[in-house]
Length: 565
RNA sequence: GCUCUUGUAGUUCAAUGGAUAGAACUGCGGACUUCUAAGCCGUUAAUCUAGGUUCGAUUCCUAGCGAGAGCACCA
Image (cartoon, rainbow, N blue to C red):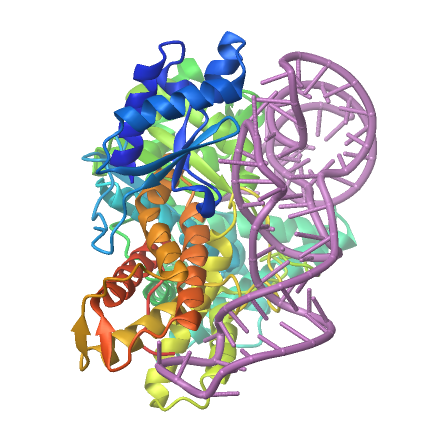
């Protein structure tokens, strides 16, 4: 429908020169019963020239009716100040493979997302970032960009030191090789919690107490050892722990459907960051205790008093390392908005130190995942792990499938994809820049506006298409039913919807569209008998096209379709 | 305290400088029993408050109130 919209836009511009291209829109009509496209051109012209909008709209309507290509636009209708258009549609509608967008088509675009830290739990915050980042990447691919995916992971720093230090407070012993990866990672998570708990206890007893100061010192020493690799025992624990964590992440990416092209580590970006800061001291200043700081909107430390790089310093190093690894036209980093203030300052520093790179970088901040009645903290262990959430959704899905005739393996595979769909869709159907309230009972529905609802619709269509194969087909001549017509017109909106999603970096447009499309199909399905003695080939085509759009739309969201459920 | 983000039905979410603010869940009612009922149909219900800009504001601006996040050597 984009070519049609462009055609209309040109025609509007030739009607009046008072208005420029970016002052009005030709977009999808919100109410499908009023048309496929609409323009507010008359309202804008009227406002500009002090004329009556309705009169202008009537004139515009007459003009467009005479000038628009009848092979594209079937009907022009004036309602109030709006002009609505009915596009010529047929069941032979083509679903475009790619959507042209000047910022993406043919460009090299990098997406960094997920960023879990080794030796810490992969929690639902990471799940959220992964979901958003994967979908953004796919929008880039849809727009014809060459896309690379990255995950950046904190394999050095205080959380690692606290974990390794915390091991001594656990009753459990360092895991043996034959233990499952999940168990090993669980062990590391509890060591982190134990370390933090112990430290908090000691602090409670007195911030100046000998015990507390000793503990702080021990963690510092551990941190230093991790950096300089001088302690063989620490090296072994560190290397094993890191490996286990990364294996566990890989298991999850498999379930979630993400495949990263590059992994970056803070142990690598840190030294680069230090080097960049030291060679660009004109942009930095000396702070208290020997720290090196950057004065942006507010002050941030890039190198701390002990000469170690902070988050900001490492991020600066990452900017260079990432670009050197794969020179891109545009780089997006998807991260939580609790980091906004720190990263805004960091980006300002990157633009000064690495101007040719900084201008290509953009941070996208997502809201927090919150619970109705629970505060999350990985320090205290009060979190929901990503895999646990998937498993609990799987159980709910399996319950629904208990009477289906399938093997247990089949059911399990499907339940997993359905669980991921439920979680991802909940995240992607809304504006991710805002916080998301995660109520496991309510928002992770398998019914209603949900991922599974859309998967289910696709399953129904596949089932129909399978049966229809054995039935003789005819070409109906009577007009399509009301429901079929609505479904067809909704299919036509897919391309334009995707364009809007790409333009605004907003996958929720696609998600909301899919709900609408699935709902239109289910309305059609409930009120029309598709097959009898014979089958109308137009309806078969309609089913095929609907399925294709559902599959493509779910793909954009990073959700798999299933054959049965 | 300062900075940033945010405020739409009972709940969880959409949308928009302009056409009757759109879903889902919950509640209540219903149909079919035909191709997967994780479905379909009906029904009640909302733009935090006060100003401003505008022909027109729920959307933009200001203030207030509520919620969340951040406030240099964690990330």
